Image (cartoon, rainbow, N blue to C red; front, side, top):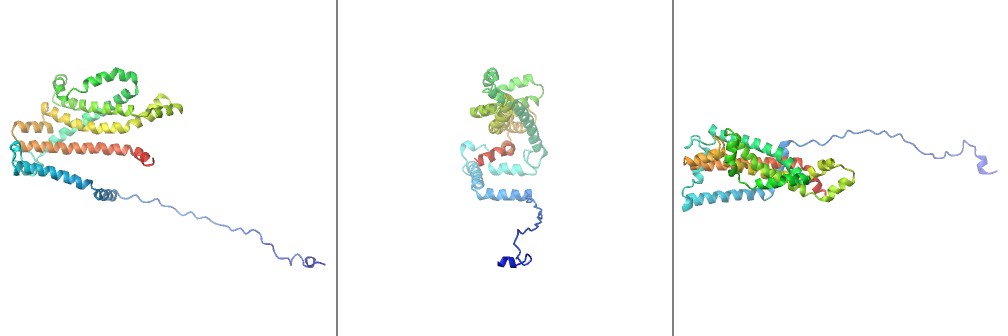
Length: 312
């Protein structure tokens, strides 16, 4: 008799079986990272900006320009600068509560001139963008439209803005509409030309790939042409803003009752030379701010392009 037959079933050792354990999964709530406060983001960006050489070079450039102005007019007294107001005279007039020529940071008329010029720029720039971008897209996209419109466009574009002044005064009544028209005209040409160049710069392989994927002509225009031309469009808008200020100052000198250009021209005729410099510096500051605003909007709207370039 074998040993296994002697052992009873109850005496046999239990065979180890698979051990199952009940595991309860408890989901821990994952809280998204809190967004930093806008003020903190601004402080961080300013900190990064000050780490580079750009702000210090910018300050150095301004300092050199002001030093040249001060030395040439007030110290060295060069003959060609003898009638030009000095640095200290201009800034004293600009900040004075009782200015000699009646215009400073503390007078309401100063801000009225700025507001009138900003309003004219806003209207002209809006019209130039609304018309210049579609016209530029059509010139760049449609060969028929380009052959029909572009010769006339190129014929009118080189005409200086001052040459349009008599036509603007004859065609438009009042003193406000001619100024807006002249400002719009220069801005329109800059916007339309850069938009057309943006369309023409798109690689033909992108258009062919979209057509091979079954895209219609309208879909290619909306999803390939317009996004591809955006970098040129916003570059054109920045140029357009600068050209608009240039044209506005010239138009206000000829036809206008308020505005920075009118202020500069009137100050010259009344021999108020410090006010001329105040108007010029104000024109430069306001123009710089508006161009920076256009640049900021373009950067925001084209964040997808910057991400695509960063990822290769």
